Length: 242
Ligand code: GLP
Image (cartoon, rainbow, N blue to C red; front, side):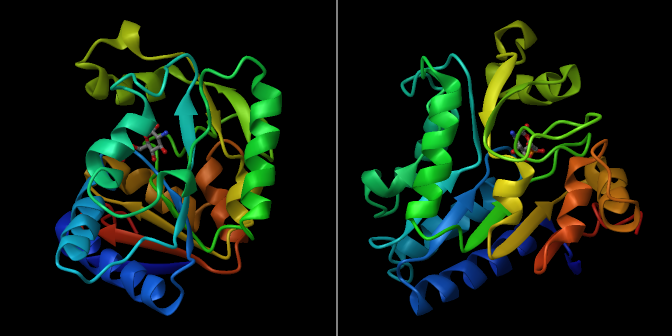
């Protein structure tokens, strides 16, 4: 895996945003896979800044979000769709019809997951998949387990993951959904380029295991070792155990 270390989370965000905008300029039809969580917030802020400065045009781009909670309508402020509106889509010129999300309210979730896989294929696959890292080594909502589900699927969240997400629900753990829809590891590994971003000391152990440990479903992020072109972008704190 190609590892890049920068001094601060803001520095990571700045360089990554410029990198993505450069690719977007070269290929205006870029297809991006996007994460939620605290980690990408400075990166999204930087993309917005570049767009407002006239340096990033998203009018021909396509995005696919990694995951979504089950049971939250798009209008719920805690949905990942609302998160993306708040941090990125509300400020850039990406056409709404090309910002793809899993529908956490779908009556038939298997069918919804299949629809998503097909939509990704129809878009020609994901050019750059950006990822965060769960402190327990999860990616999207591919939780540590004896076995992983390859494609987009209905997942049950671990307590640790629900606790980590509680901050987005005003600290109310009981409000955090127990289930989500998520791209699977194969969906993620099919992206032409994978960029995992991790910042802060709480990620240092997972980062070290992901890069230096064996490939194991007990640390889903370790599967990124199998990708032909996986990059790991870190700040000094997240890189401190390497
Ligand atoms: C959630 C998301 C993941 C994200 C992870 C880490 O569980 N489903 O996609 O990578 O949290 O979040 P954070 O960046 O806040 O540490």
